[in-house]
Length: 194
Image 1: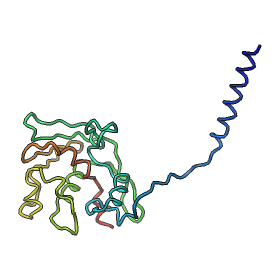
Image 2: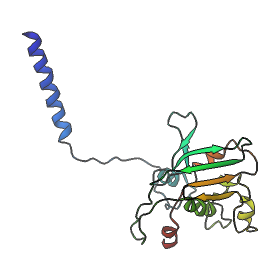
Image 3: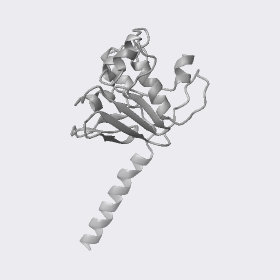
Image 4: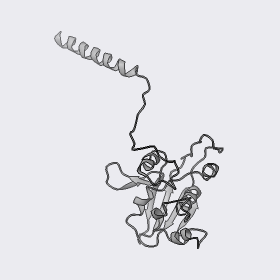
C-alpha cells in the first residue's frame, strides 16, 4: 500500500512540475557582445564584435568540430583531398537555400558552386573597399594574381557542377580547411542591391 501511495505521489509531482514547463511563453535569448557590429558584410569584417555576429548569420564550407578534434563539413557535405595535398574537391550540401532579406528583391534559391566561386572572388578582391580578407584564400593557385589585378579569374577555383567545387592550392597547406571556416557564401544579387 505504501508503495502505491509513493508511486502516485511521484507521478503527481512529475505532472505538476511539467505543467509549468508547458505553459511557458516564448523567451528571448540574449547574447552579450562587446559592442554593436559595424555592419554585416563578411568581406569587410575586422572587429571581434562584428565577427561574433557574422558567425551566427553566415555559414562556411567547413567549421571546427564541437569537441575541437578537427574540421567538419558545414555547407560542404564532404570533401576529398588529393594524395599530393594540393586539390580539394568539395561536395556541396543540396537543398541549402539563401534566405530572403528585407529590402532586397530576389527569390530564395539554392546555394550552388557558382555562388561559392563569386563569394571567394569577392574575398580575394584587391580593393580594400570590397574585401579585407584575401589572406584566408591566399594559398589557392592564382589567388595572388587575382588579388593583384593581373588575372581576371582565380586559376585554382573550378566549378565542376552545381554541387561540386574544386580548389587547387599553390602548395600543400595544413591551414586551408581552418581558413575556410572564415569564408562565407552570400548571394550576389543581395550584395549588389545593398
